[in-house]
Image 1 (cartoon, rainbow, N blue to C red):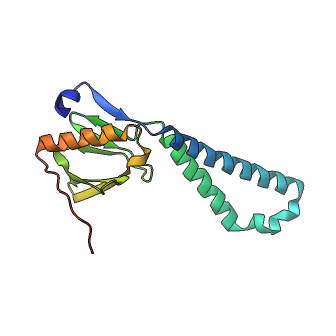
Image 2: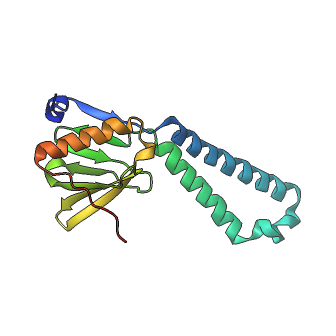
Image 3: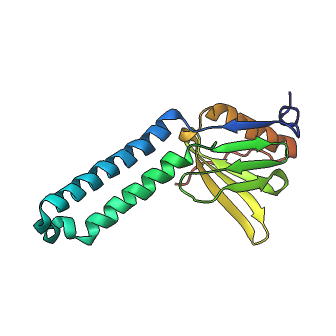
Length: 167
């Protein structure tokens, strides 16, 4: 069965995040919650501590980064990391806030290191060639995902080439 047959107009293939990714995001949020609560309780019970390390801006920036990063990972894993339809490839990498919906006709190719855990997808936009990197270790069913993308690219006539590394 070809990818076109597998991905008809009314079906799609969704690839979610592996379960440990969501748990990792939740654990970061839990740590941020505990640290925030501990500092708030300390400030309420011993007000003079605001003049110590608790009052330093770096501490609050660090805690804010934990909150934002953990929430981004935890909430970002609610939707699939990749969705393939007959018309588009949709990617939601965690390191970006933006979802990339790439029509198959605009896809120019992919790059993956031999045995690699990263796939770079190259595509055309009105502003020129762009790319998005995807961590394959986060995808539940990564082999199926790579096989589907590869088969779709071959069907489109994009030839696989092996490029040997430098020096």
